[in-house]
Length: 358
Image 1: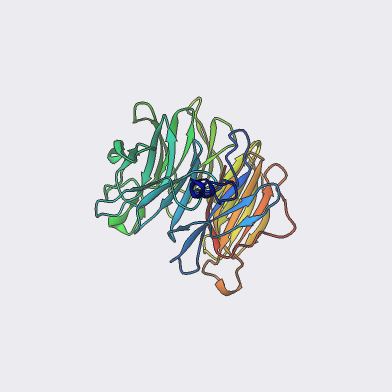
Image 2 (image 1 turned 60 degrees about the horizontal axis):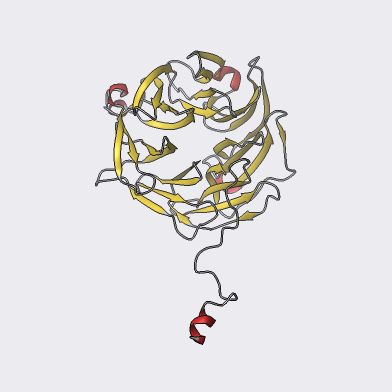
């Protein structure tokens, strides 16, 4: 009996990981970063405390092509092409996911984004013509949203990312014809009801659209990255009245609009030059369309993501222009003023590839 009591004594270490950064549903406190090695063979999770900017690295091993999302108190890690799994983590518990879901039956699926909506896990699969729906507790397949009607001639609509608003998912479809050298067939944004699991509305866009959350607004910022045909740029999708309005073209942005985030009356946008030699970090007035260049970098911008503090976090990796001189890092900006928040960027052991907040 004494041995049993001693084994259960208060000085023994816990048998489960201690949650050091619990989720606060009312306020974001932590950035989670998917980092990657220069050859993209190794990836890891890192966290940054939003108040102290303390960095904790190599918390969990992930793929070299991982994207992150956070929803309903769950960190979602989407291990992309060649791995094809989704891992669900409890915030702060990184020793193992609470659930890992395989998404391939032998053919690649390449998960790109996900959300937990109406109690269901919706996963965008870039290599298929449907959105997968899984039970977020068991991982069981419980349905799908067909997207074949919105595909281009190769049969795939290429869903890139999503924004969730009031029980609906707004999904950007790239629509690249792979049978014709990945030709741009014009993009679409589709509204998917989480309740009915069906497409309710659609909007035509320029090529390669991405959708970006606009704080807590019912509007969505849409960036398009057309390289032929209609030029890309920034547009505003109002999910309330269904209007879709062009705001600023790539000629004004100085490149094709790519990663972006919006808060209040401003947005921070990464505009990739048409010769791929540099990326301009732009501040855009969403009421007037005025554009101010904050900085220009030869590093490759991997992510521009906003949090509920009105900040834009920008991740960069080595890129292809001058990788030996590049400095993979995180830069923090105040969206309203477009001022950089820190004197020096945050440097991690591996390069930021994707990030989210909880």
